Amino acid sequence: MLEIRWHGRGGQGAVTAAEILATSVINEGKYAQAFAAFGPERRGAPVLAFTRISDSEILTRCQIYEPDIIVVLDKNLCTMEGVGDGLKDGGTVVLNTDQKAEDYLQIFGNAGKIAVVDATEIALRELGTPITNTAILGALVRASGVVRLETLEEVMKQRFKQFAEKNVNAVKRAFEGTVLFEAGAKK
Amino acid sequence: MGRRVGISGNYAVAYAVKMADVDMIAAYPITPQTTIVEKLSEFVANGELDASYMNVESEHSAISACVGASLTGARVFTATSSQGLALMHEILFMASALRTPIVMANVNRALSAPLNIWNDHSDAMAQRDAGWIQLWVRSAQEAFDTTVEAFKIAEESRLPVMVNLDGFIVSHMYEPVELPDEEEVKKFIPSRPLENRISTKSAHAVGVVGPPEYYYEMKYQAIDAIEKSRVKIKEIDREFNSRFGKSYGEVEAYGMDGADAALIVMGSIFGSAKEVANSLREEGKKVGVISLRVFRPFPIQELRKAVEGIKAVGVVDRATTPGGVGNPLYNEIATALYDMPDRPAIQGFVAGLGGRDIRQDDFRLMYSATEKAAREGAGRCMYVGLRE
Image (cartoon, rainbow over all chains, first blue to last red):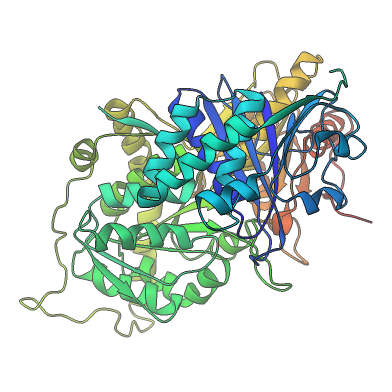
């Protein structure tokens, strides 16, 4: 079982990203859940979403407290309390940031791998708007290999219709532009 | 051939309603139900579903419109949650007494105050005496399958059916769902005109005054109908199995071989309770879990069979009866088991009110308290996960 926690802000599409990933995994014949810890829906407010992935049927419906992977869609969320909480030792962190992975070693002290990508820049260039969810998916796939890029593209085509192409481009650019840093913490 | 898709519980309900080829939908949006009727209005707008979609100004009007449409023989659907269901309260009793086979999805959500959009079972429990059949689902797959079954149960019992699914935990969770072919669903629940319904050709009054000389007998007919629906629910689930290869039963028991203690739950926590039971079994603990899929009519015989040989059961309520003896589910279980020769000790729990997550440790605590009840007898109701 692989558990992913997404941190974003209302409007950035963290929940949509969690759902696209789960749908892609399901389309590849595996099992997945995507869900959110909804609050009052406000633009800009911190949002939590979750994806669970497994080769066999998933029984639990508890929230995720000890994720294998943490994905952060807005670098300013990293300094907020609780973003690194519960990460499994040696786990993976995927960050949207224009800074170096090394800058985050203190916040994610037990991370095994930190993947960074400037998803905001990619989103602005490809979509014309700072909605970073699809770009960060590209980084997540690069860092984890949880799903094939082609499957992700297929799901995005169905979901985004006329906006799919731009988003697929954002995913591809982020996939290529992601920098992987071995942070070194062991599992 | 069916297809396997990744969709939310609410979308699973919407697909079931579409495949059931309903004639009329009347609804008022409310979180966390909204995406059901949103999807259905999309189906109607783009021509995938040939139904009349009625926007109303409140849930009271939504259910009233459904009663009226159902009396004409139409297949009708509505969906709501929480305050919306509470606002329907008085009409719910009319829907059952007028024997209208309405199917309603109730996406379980806490009742205010304080205002809370998250899951618990207070909304449905407050309507348990309204004469509706109440089914409870545990996953998006079941939300689909049970909604399909619900139309057949409603029409063959001539009673309204409430399909309950946990807000967010089922309604908004994306997970795998096997969707059958629409044609197969239509064969399972063929549309057919119901007799004795009002129309422009045969106008008659319904819902008229029932003085003391008549009211009692008419009320009894609805009581008798829900009693008789027990057989229908069983038959229809069996028929669903022969067509779609899945059956759920009224009560599902998990890991009960040689178990001393078992939790009894309703709704989506069944999965988490099973997972924790598996871990405890590996640690040598003899625990299992029982889930009720049907709450009205209450499955007395099936429950008694499931608890045979068990020393203690722990009943998990996600709703309360303030000032009452126990809580809604606890009270039903206690009554159903009261005159059983070797009845188990019954430990009550309240958990997960207003969307509070029921964590793995909470399940461990409940299993362990139920095991303790098996040795020493049950204690007072425990409020699990409540901060001091």
